[in-house]
Length: 153
Image 1: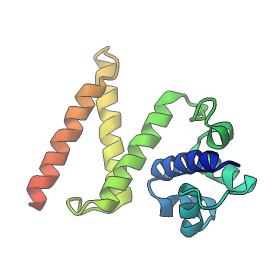
Image 2: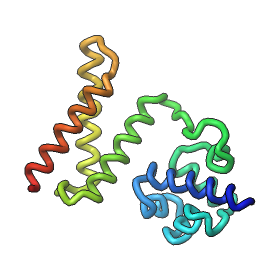
Image 3: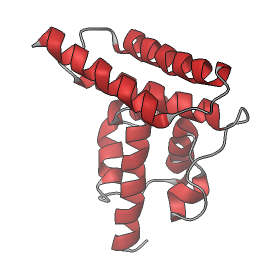
Image 4: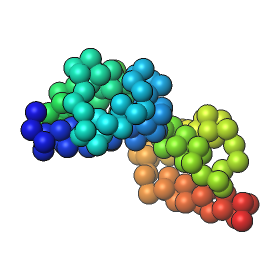
């Protein structure tokens, strides 16, 4: 593996850490130590094939994409894109809650509530015969963020 290949693989592993929510979360899901993941993501060590498979499975990315950067990065879940959207929303909310001093809630509970808000917005729009409006959901998220900052400040 060339130095550039190692760097690019490291960047994709770093992205997988973000998908998982954090390096520690990915370490817990894969059984690979956080220190080893750090070495992989910085291109200092080449991961074994078994480590790449574990990382890919833990984050629902394709092994082909993780190893080569080719193909589709995300494995489409059997339930379709909506389940993937829900997983991404949950991971983002969990990460925000675990890192933010403004959110004074258990990260799992916060992420569940955030996901419920997402589901509610989507169901409400579909009930009105509209497709899901990402911009409207972003406005709701922005409003919620401002409320958290007001309460904590």
